[in-house]
Image (cartoon, rainbow, N blue to C red; front, side):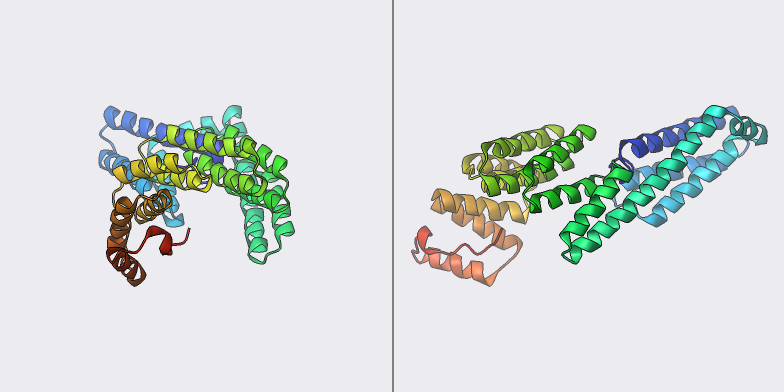
Length: 310
């Protein structure tokens, strides 16, 4: 679940281990004895329902509290007093517990300073926002959002080398995150737009390719890739990606808008009309209706004003 929401690989692995151990011990207890069987069935069902629900919905604070109650009840059944006593005096367990406490404190401080960075950015105090983002990354270097704040700060200062270094370090820490490759892509699009350096252009293409490789069945990835390539003026490649996006999600409004813009730029009148009609059917607009009417009356493509903004 996005590396245990925001804690990075460490918290993600810790959560997965705790979840797996709890499930295993409950199943073991279930098959060994009929004592508390009904409670165990309830707890197992609750764990499974929570896991399934969290895969498709944002995990809010009340849901985490519910999960904590489930875990607490589960371990109350699993261990008797003697077992807990043995675990309590086990040096390894105490060391792991101490590590978790320290990591939790660091995560809390990291999120606090990240919040300060956000507030400073809202006040347009970008230097202060960058300073808080640096502190957040120093305290807990596994918060992608804090790193993104820091990268944005360096881009405002036109320090492209530092921004590039931070992007690559973040991708190295989270090599399987398609979302971070998407973030990298938009950063590199900005860097290319400001510098026209082919190095950053290639970085965009590499980020797009890796994002799609990690999740080739997500329509959103193809749509994002199409927009990035459109900004690079790679219209033919952008056209291919946006069509793939629509094949997976045919009612995606923004994809139809981009498709119509691409056909307009490529001078394909018939395809442009079909695409913009489809976009208008998803989100009707009087301006688009007037544009379609003018085309039906014989207006040329170079005479129209594209009705959508990117």
